[in-house]
Image (cartoon, rainbow, N blue to C red; front, top):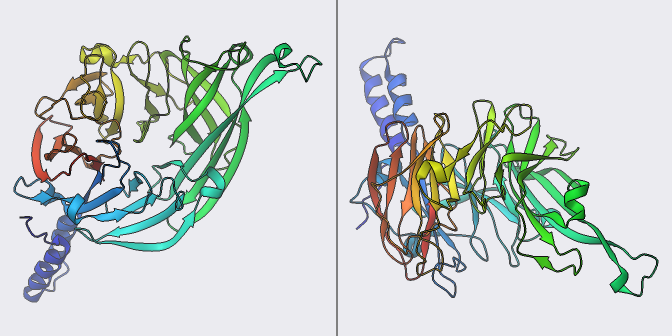
Length: 454
């Protein structure tokens, strides 16, 4: 039985009114008390991905449900989005973002007839999400399955991206004889759109064709996927994570066994989205585009970025305010966690430079969903340390490949723990002290899984 949710702001108003009947003095601290109560409350929205055809695929749609943070911390509360939640519009798993205070949820539908549709909702608690503003489609700019993120600019802007590729060949004067064609390079055409989250309108759109340096391009390397735009500290550059692929230059077939190059990021002027350049890390190798969760965060003047598919295990990389990688910052998660093949699935940074990170590694067993068992770690960017969180239960069917969101409230980070198709709980990590609190029970459904909190 789910406990009722109490609106703390309403309580605060009642208390304030009672106090005012006793004193109308300007020195009365009533308003201060009310503000403290209001500031101490926020919604925590939990999202579940419903099974489509296979356990853990998340293709059956997304359901969301909100509780107060007090209820989120209460083990006696049950949260059951699969039976009682609000259906976030999307053909497959919705791509969700939330305002920093948790009062608003932003959604862009993924794939299908409604793919690319942006909607915004006011969070009222439970399964009450009130659509606000107009619906707008970004599909004409970035397609019906866009990769998008909310920029950290006070909930003002979202950015979505796409890439398409085309191999270029020199026909050597014999256009009818493809055996004489010589591969030269691959063009990656990137599109970037910025979205006004407040007024539900398009801010800007730019398209560019980019290639890697001459040597890498001639060897068949190219940017095949981009994602996770992030603003620098000055707010005048946009960093876009990238994945590299390689083509066999003789056959033009995809090459799956190749040397992994240094991690790369596309840099654009902001807000114009012009003048694309590519920067390269000599510390990390592999991809920087992430998957479904924010992959890079600004902190203390720099941007910290996770990479994936690194032969030496995932790193946290650092881009300084000169818009170049700081290769003196060498934060290897294999070394920090004492594992091999660490792979960052998702992570979220608090304002104190500490983060909660979801990962798997080479020894992770494959579970019901066909993905490796996953774990959480507490990360300190300043100390360059990462420690597995042992106060959260793990089992083989607990996998976080599609994990999207962590709710941040001060130094506390809220996360969901539940194996595929099994019940679990919200856990709250105090990133400053490392204390982990078990919270509300998460009620699951067959083959389904939870994809985070907002």
